[in-house]
Image 1 (cartoon, one colour):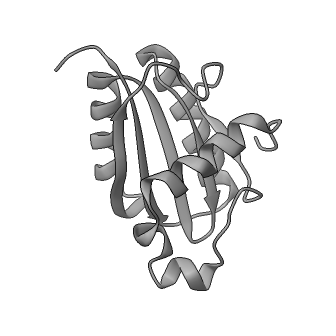
Image 2: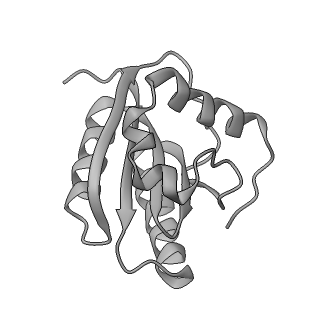
Length: 137
């Protein structure tokens, strides 16, 4: 694989979600991502994670594979992966957004809204978030 930069977005259902679990995920992600040259953000609530990872293709792919095997994530779905020239979150080894960016209700998510969303709709969520001040841990 080349060393070009990519953005990867996935969704999953948290398993055993609580504030302590989230804090652990964020601390570990920030350490690992800083070491691997990955940046991004995690949007989360009790029923869903939506995360963007940005960085070297190999590092992002390895991180996503590790997430897909992590027992704290259920139903992991890669929503998009694309080459990029510029990162949306260059200064964040892992930004956390505590729910305010969500545009779907839990009922809509349960009916598959995220998997039905277009790549453009998903990217717009993260583009809007990148323009806002951070609000999480």
